[in-house]
Amino acid sequence: PPEPAATSPIRGTRRSVRTQRWMRWLHVYTSMISLLLVLFFGLTGITLNHPSWTLGDAPDSTSTTGTLPAELLTADGGDVDYLGVSEYARDTLGAHGSIGDYGTSGTSGEITYQAAGYAATLLFDTTTGEYTFDVEQQGWVGVLNDLHKGRDTTSSWKWVIDLSGVFLVVVALTGLVIQFVYRKRRRSALALAAAFTVVGVVLMLIGRG
Image (cartoon, rainbow, N blue to C red; front, top):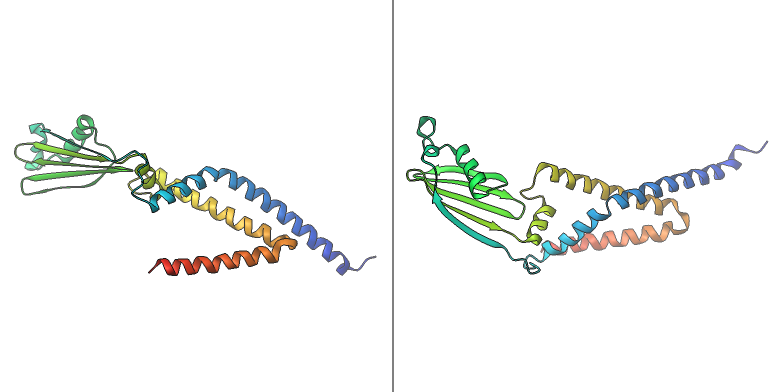
């Protein structure tokens, strides 16, 4: 019978082929799933680096004035009914997004709203109910930039960002494993990866200033 050691290279080769096959399968399908995500974060990464680029869709600012219903200014205990004022702003003035801040200072009340590419402020007099509603709506580039950063977005979109990060990590790791188990390209691939790692670290140090 053959010596056990004689079969070990064959077993090692089979294990390497099997590992490479699984890594290729995982790499291909995670790459396909994350293809649009990579495209989105790649393009918005460029526009974030150039905030002056609006591509013809500049921010739009509007201001509306009016008077709040008197019953919203005298809730239980004589305080402003901020929930009622906020619902009025959403139903009547078109406010949307999450509330960033609210409160009273003297006779002035304020509620701010935030969403991706959107910021609004409702300022009102707590005695007369007269208000000013200021809205700044970014163009579609500004909206996409805020989605890239996860700023003023919903919790579901934050999950999208987390899953995108997981997919990109899997794509990177499986790609490295594929190159590592492929003997003919292992040395050159690892040398190239090491070189770009050094270049990346140097660029990050330079970028810090």
